[in-house]
Length: 149
Image 1: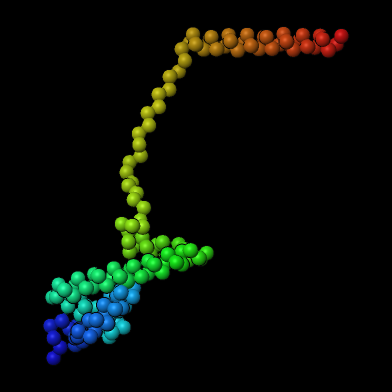
Image 2 (image 1 turned 180 degrees about the vertical axis):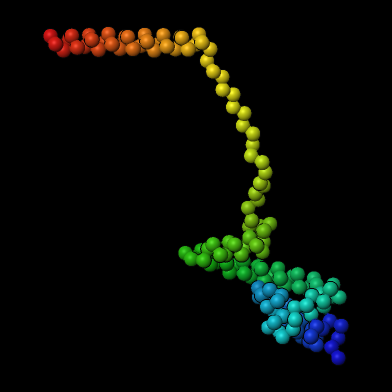
């Protein structure tokens, strides 16, 4: 009969435990690593739950695997293709290092005060424009007179 750490009759032996950790350190996820060994992933999870040392070893192996894939991806990122997929993977697996910190909140409040000119200010503007136009007409007439002579 299989031991308490077995699901579907497959026990996680010390040899398979070591192989599982090696696969995790190569960058495989737990589901894929367990499948390669012919065990169910729940067997590995149950074993980790029952054995704190194995749980820690899984965490360390996963970190080593992420390090390995991160290094590989950084090498590939220097190549002209595949860059975006690499960044997406890195952001998913090392968000504290690769994800942009974006805090989405309410837009800042902008207060705009529009003050209409007073009636007197409008009269002054119109008078100034009229004077400029009148001076421009007088200058133009003077040039026309000079050109005709």
